[in-house]
Amino acid sequence: MTDSDPTPAPADPPLFVLLNEIGIIAQLSQNRFEAIQPDGLRMSHFVLLNHLARVGDGTTPLRLARALQLAKSAITNTLQRLEERGLIRVEPDPEDGRGRRVWLTPAGRERRAAGIRTAVEAFALLEGVASPAMLDTIIPALRSLRQELDRAREG
Image 1: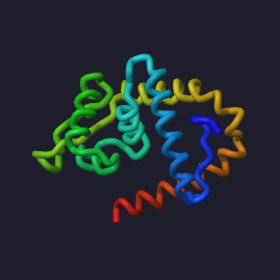
Image 2: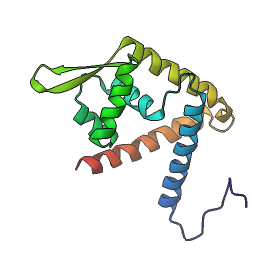
Image 3: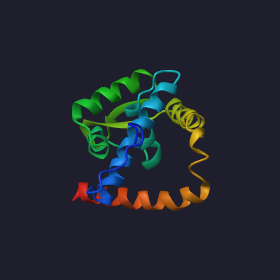
């Protein structure tokens, strides 16, 4: 047994082992992703760009904070940094004069796409382990777990 590949304790329930592996994968992949970004893009910044691209922009900072499970101060800081880089724009909410809405800029869309391209290159080492057939099986299962956790968070 090595530090990089410990065998789980026999008493650990399979669901815990699964979630533990997902957590370790998330940490390792985040560190690798950040290390290969040419402009120092942080994972938290990419996650926000990706969220806006996936679910549509024009949302409020509060909704972003809830969706990304961040404190309001953390989302404010992330928005400021992305706006300074020209990757998003924050505008007054036309429906609520006190509120704001967040929009992905063309530069933000391109930076997200570049982040994906860079990540795919950096994680090419996994192609021998994660075959297309394996991914076709794993992705729906992981998506189902994520959707259930999303529902639990919302309710």
